[in-house]
Image (cartoon, rainbow, N blue to C red; front, side, top):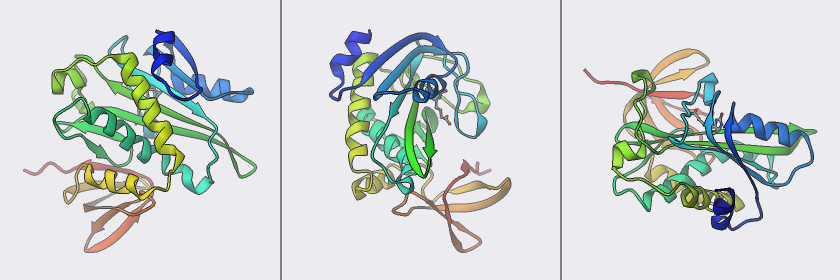
Length: 249
Ligand code: BTN
């Protein structure tokens, strides 16, 4: 499989394939401590898959793609915060070639199909002396049939679109698209693509800001991928946090 994945990847990237690991992001962190080259780590399962905000990411054996890219891009620190959103657009573009239904990106890092999460992205970075030392882009994509706990609000591509995708080819296409899109992280096409696919646009959401809940209406994003929400008739700009759908009665 290692060899097969490499066949689909355009750039010079070392590929490491693991049967089981706690988290491919953790594995990349270990590699990042040493001298490294651009590396892709793919695991068949994870025992401690991590998501944003301290959440876990269910990573059962052969049920999905669990992978992390360790990169050392020439990037300003101000650009690092854009990576997750750009990668979300890259994955959405690739998946849209296979899936007829519209895919949506839930700010800031999840991809939704039929109102259910099918993919999450966890970007981590190491900054030393005001310079980016490395970037880890972790991607978890649910492919095969699975029953998720209700509170996770997740599903898989098979369950929502009825298709089974070739894992190695899909990994290659995603990596190629990500590498291509990150070449010009400030390209405004990334912003317009994100806006077109934005989940919960013009909908009421619960916004968690520094542990305080607000109710607002999602108005879009600005050119820095910051979320724009109307709260009590004021437009506020949110750079980090979480939005939750408000279920109307
Ligand atoms: C989220 O749901 O908030 C993001 C989930 C990211 C999951 C992927 S799976 C591969 C990589 N390893 C991890 O531990 N997390 C990411």
